[in-house]
Length: 290
Ligand code: SAM
Image (cartoon, rainbow, N blue to C red; front, side, top):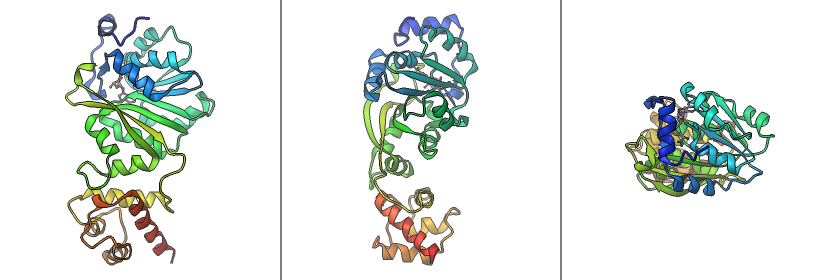
């Protein structure tokens, strides 16, 4: 099968099947062999690895993954792409294509059944409209994952990587950094895709921490506090948490927590590190245990 990273071959396949891009599925297919090679190299895939690909499209990156990995499972939502994938991936015996919505797949079961229960590597050129639910779903469901190497919108890659005190720092930065070490592999311009997206893109690799960088008694509470703090990012931490429907502690309790932790009465959520959110969360856990 011809390399679909070559735009000429992609156009031929699209014509053969009279494929129309579905905007609602965030379809921007990669047509740059250098970018594809860079992704595969960054993901460090070996013949021992099982890879989950989200949104294979016409199978461009899937071909590269099949060459490099032991096994590939590719989950695609668009029924029009399934017959194309059967064609473009026909030379490979180590790939399974599932016609499903990735947000509805029980990935733990999938890994158990198809990947011998071994930790997997996730590699994808993600549909940008659901980047955050996909990444958070993978982490929060505690699927055994070694790393996630994905193409995302450039701004989102920056948000995943930055620390406190910057305008891009937010709930996504903290969540990603709690679970993984982020590293931006490359920036990718719109002309590497067909059709061209309206935004810049970047490949980011998230390598899962063996142990989380902070210890917290109630992970769920910590993430509720993080979300509440950033929902109203211009407010002080005390006001943000007091006004949040997700947080049931009183303003007095919140003020006491901020005071005892020495955070300063006017501090905003965006100034807090992951460690400080963990201590804040543990303070409330202690309070409810009393
Ligand atoms: N991997 C291909 C490539 O690089 O050329 C296509 C990437 S394209 C940015 C995103 C792909 O994800 C499309 O094929 C789209 O149909 C698929 N997709 C969108 N939403 C999805 C969902 N909820 N579950 C599974 N696949 C989805």
